[in-house]
Each structure stands twice: as structure tokens, then as C-alpha cells.
Image (cartoon, rainbow over all chains, first blue to last red; front, side):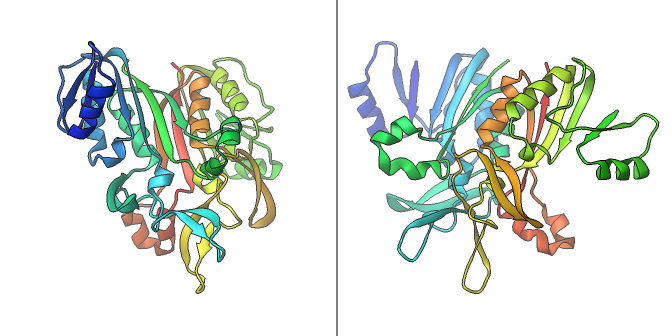
Length: 178
Length: 178
């Protein structure tokens, strides 16, 4: 098993807390790493793809690393979330209450800067169709699409998360190489 | 070829203007029509599914009517479009300009009433994941997802349609029976 991250700090943390004889941690940008064809049974990417400019290129390379029958699972920020405009996304009334989630320029794909803990974080907005079709064009079979929405049992213990039902923050997809 | 519509007026128009020896027009609600298993090479549904309550049930029945290798193509109102809330969808500034498209209660699937030419038109909101997974659960292979967005050449002749790039109105899907 190989864990890849671009951050040496994250890798140091992983090596300290999640060391395992069968896991190797490697530093690398997901856009630049390379592996032999057909060498993985499973590729997992967690909340990385919305930082990547060339989605079709990356998905195509991942598809090449998958063995026949192997699976790609990823999560990414949802297009409804990355299409927020302007700024925070929530429209507020005069009392500061969230009245609705604002979407704009949905069809204008590409980088958008936003404040996310710090100002000017660069994320790449893509449409739902682009995410799904990129997998299909890479020769993968889409097996499941999940929009991460909290359910009522979880909300009973986390009442502040109720607004997460008002718009999806994450999209998760499972695709298989035939 | 069989054309089905619930409206006798629409069928009369179709028979008058699109009569063809190989086309039979039938009156029926899409929720109620029945056909033999495997009898169609192609099923096309145009902007109907967002009126249908039981999407998995309908898609499952359509999948049964498809022959092996046959295709279902449908268009439906986009979840971003049906999740608009409240009312018109566009948030307006004090001068009446459209500032953003408002989404709310995305995870709350089901009927929503809206004004669409006339008041209280009933449409059913569903999430993107529900639309895609419904096809997969019916045993179909998703081949293409299209979000209908006008391109620049078309906008040159239809400048009023530019706002259609700000949020998608329609979702189109092609799925195949293995």
C-alpha cells in the first residue's frame, strides 16, 4: 500500500501515527506521480481533485494504474459547493440568517479563489457532467455517486450541521476498470 | 415506434403534424403504461421525469422494456434547478438584477410547487446521486451525462439566454442495458 501526499508535514504525521509494515508513504504531487500500468487494486483520493487543474489527464493516468476489475473511489468538493458566488456562498438576510445557497457561473469551469481559513485559496470548479464523463472517457464504469448529506440520527448529536442538508458540500464516486 | 403522452391534445397534434406509417401514438401516463420485456432498442423521455414521484420504479420498468444493448436517453430538470428556493430561484438586488441562483433544501427530495406559467405546478426534486444511482440500480450502464448549457456561438444569436450559463436548467443522461 502506498500513501502519497504533497506535504512533508502530513507525511511525517502519517509515518508517526499510522506506520504499518505494508504501507509506504511517498512525497509527490498527484499531478506528477507515476506508477506501472495495472499495479493497483484500489485507488482512493480524498478531497484532492478540486485542487487539480487537469482532471481528465489525472483520471486517465489513474485508470492506467488500475488492474482489470480494480476500483477508483474519490471524494471532491461538490460542483454546487465550488460554484458558490460570491464569497461565502450563503445569502444572508438583514438579521444575518442564511436564506439560501448562492450558485453562479456554473458553466464557467476553472480556478476560483475563495477564503477557506486563509484568503485566496485556489480551487477548481467543474460541472457534475465533467466529473462523471471524465471517468467514462478514461474507460471506467461508474458504479455509485454519493452526495454527502447528514442524516437525522447524526444531526441529533450535531445540530449545527443541519445547514449541510441545504446544499451538498462533497461528491463521492466509485468507478471500476472493466 | 410508439409515442406515449398523457395528453390527448398533445397526441392529436402529434398525429396531425408527425404522422408516419411506422409510428403509433398511444395515450397513457408514463407511470402506468406497460410493454413486453426487451421490446425496445431505444427509449427516449423528454422532460417528464421531474413530474414522476417514483423514479426508481419507472426506471426499473423501462430497463425491463429494453433489449440487451438498448439505450435509455432522458432529459429532466436539473437538481440545481428543482432545488431552487424560494420561488423563482434568482436572487435579485435592489435594482431587480439577478445576483445569483438560490438553492435550498437540496437533500429534501420530493414534490415542490412552483409558478411555471401558472401557479402551483407540482414538480419532484431529486438529487443528482438519486438520478444516477437509480439507473445503476436498474442494471443500466451510465454512458453520458450532459448539463444543457448554451455555448458562445448560440449566445451570439440569443443574447438573452446568457443567464442559462449561470446555473444548469436541464440534465440529460444516456444509459445502456448490458
